[in-house]
Length: 257
Length: 276
Image 1 (cartoon, rainbow over the protein chains, first blue to last red):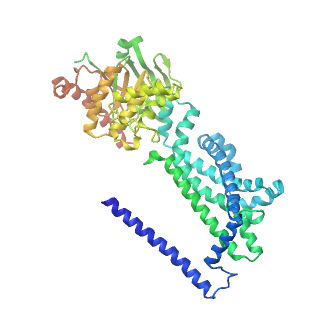
Image 2 (cartoon, rainbow over the protein chains, first blue to last red):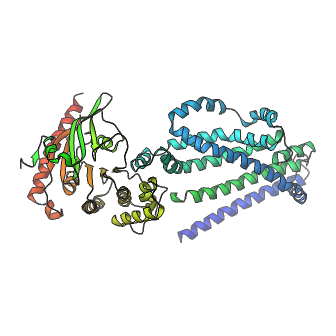
Image 3 (tube, helix red, strand yellow):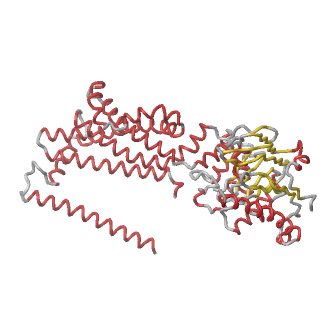
């Protein structure tokens, strides 16, 4: 009974959200149609949709999404693969922290954008350059998340593991890594959003495809509808990756329920 | 009565001798200027169930940490099974008051942990774990996560986890202190039957005199500030320790004797607090 009531409440709230979105789009459409705003400044939703359909037919829509998506995934996973083991090492060893802390402190305040000139010089306008921008923008915050997560582990679990015969390496693999997983995963969700801003900024400066490129290209030809479409697509892809991430989180952390 | 209650601790060492499983020889421990243990001598015989009794601050937990190798003594030495303790060793299995189960592992995986660390094959460790899960009465909960269990069940998992690792000695650090009175009694009875079946040497810490009388074969009372042995008593109460035993004159006599010692120690440490 209570279950059913909750479901009804949820579906009512969902309908309100959907109605709000529709009303917003409708208002936007009406204002544009009334001629109050020049379409060059702000295209109507229907125009953006039309552009989307045309680009779909030319296959450039999927190509741009795929290009940005691939760059994010490669850069993000490279950053995670480096950050998890390194972060656990740094989190558990004070000597390792002493060695790497100065370097990390230097890298941390640098925005990923500041790496664009150097990476362009080193790699040219290539995929490697995009990957490196995403990597540089994600790896330091990811490391900080992992280090913090390792310090949140209950020390008694480490004592218990050692008492049961686990060596240093086994403690890391069997206790610290799984014990950090909840914090690492929620940190990674934030980092993934960050990776997207990195790739878009890299593409805005120099690229031949991708969502950032699409926006800049639209700007060059005064196609405001392309610009808005690019923005909408960025928002959509980030929302979808977020949802996928939440599913992964739920299955990995099933023990928490 | 004087024959069984001796207040001179080293006297006990004589009758234990070469048969000792744990021997604590002249151990002192200080943290900075604070002296926690002062010349402690305890010998625990093979198969003995020794309960260490004392108010908080008497260094009971520190003593357990020295035996399990988490800390080193400032002077003196600790031997377990004729080997000097130099590092953490799975030969001394510890049951913690806070359970210390791995929340991301199932009951089965928790119990298998020590065996897995030793590289024992999956099937064999599964069988061993199953045996001990049944021994503590948790059949049917193999695939539950600790988060879904009650405090008493968690502590049973923790006991099974140590048993599966087949240690020489089991150390209990106030394991039932966080449980309600009824659960505690059930677990005490279970622990006694496990003790009888397994024949392990057990060192058990508590501040409950009744718990000590119920479980032990021998009781050592510790005084505080600094921690030292003040009374060493052979517990000759008959088994099983039923409600009838708990009302017997001998039970009351032992309880009174321990209570007097403990009271004296508590008063002494309160005096010390008053005049810094």
